[in-house]
Image (cartoon, rainbow, N blue to C red; front, side, top):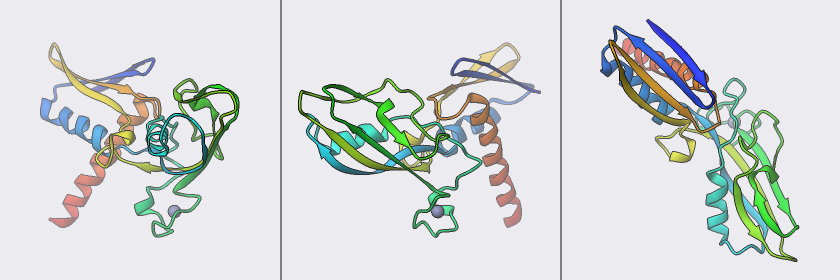
Length: 197
Ligand SMILES: [Zn+2]
């Protein structure tokens, strides 16, 4: 028996009459293999801010992006042969010339379904007369490759005769979507194993 409860960014999946090792398999799939979008390629057009280009690019990579898993492929599994196309990449741009903080909200995406999950994450800061401009590409990836693609925290908690899988989303996907995707990934693994036996 499995039931799911969600409050804010936290979802609790309660497993009854299940061994911890089974629940732990979901936890590991969530951390390593549930894909989300993150900024991967950064072209800096202008950067007068105090941050080095590399630091600015790194900070952009860590901004959580809302993720639509139904419309996109992992680049490595895309029909374009990993070249990059509208089915595996989302283009975004960021530009600001006013002094003050440059927030994640200044990143404009070509797809409204894939955009910064929060608008108030500081990316860099500008003084009077300074400008920043960048063109970026976001792609789907998994936490096993880089933590920036991890969809959230996941941990186990004993709860009487049940085990709770606690999922804290970073904002790219809902807790329910994270869990559902982990089920798909695990089923895929079992089918692959079955086909090899
Ligand atoms: Zn593609």
